[in-house]
Length: 438
Image (cartoon, rainbow, N blue to C red; front, side, top):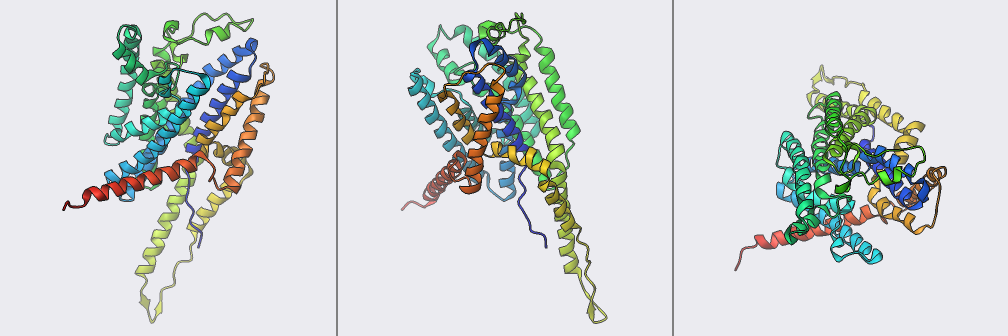
């Protein structure tokens, strides 16, 4: 009988891989690129930023929604599922605050920058808030994400206009937006919530409960992207922190760009819609090319095994002998087909190798800051070569951690171990609360 293996959704890891690689690129350009070549950083950032942090947050939502549905299918109560998820969120938040504290000390920043919206903190808080949205339907989640985008736009403008006149408004600005060009929760929560929706749907498909129409996903993403583009054609306001790349673009001798459209201005409502639509389209395309056939084969294999078990139960004696059992092994052929796909050179190069970046994305996020300690300077002609070499070095480190240490010296392992300890503590407290008082 063919050996059963646990299938991992490849698309999740690959979208996360693309995101972390682009985040590394942004920081490498920021640190290693000579001043006169900074225009290339601005061009690449304007083009690729919708797949960086947005992709990371979208994929965090995918994983959250998928895991939530998976635990529910195992029979987890809502309380148990909530505590399990909250345990993981708490350990991520602890790492985020520690990371921010190091930044405050090293860069001599204001103390309130301990609450700074780097990606780790945004993921942790999004997961905690996401527990509320698990109670909503698919439409409820999508409408909520859209409302957050709209309300955030007006809320930000109002706070920026009045924060200097009120300490209370200034406090809430720091709480929600510290700072406007960071990975602030209200800018990126819609990516997480939308990712939750598609993560839940993919799990339902994964267990054979529903069918999915990836064309509708792609069309839905395209519509959102076009809305972002057409509502964001107006020039962005420099006053609110957008268009900061104009100074870098002015360094190019042949470029004379005075304004940028709002949909290319990071963290604007138009950019959020534009980026969100792109992420949905990317998910639909990659899932179709990578995971769809493999999961369908797995579902067919389960169906074949179910039919085989039923035939065994229905087997009866005829003329003193058992009816001959079917010799069909189509389920084994399907598994062999999956294995053949995963053994191809193209699959190993373009799927398995980049997948490590997604599997250990949080570890890589912390490791890649070593670039800030390396005193390199490159022109635009050499920077991409240096970036590729740096990525290869990171990949080799992660490969060694994965193959020889089995991931035990990674942030992901720390989060898994720490979250389980917190979860056990929650369970123990729950048991004590349930004990009758004497």
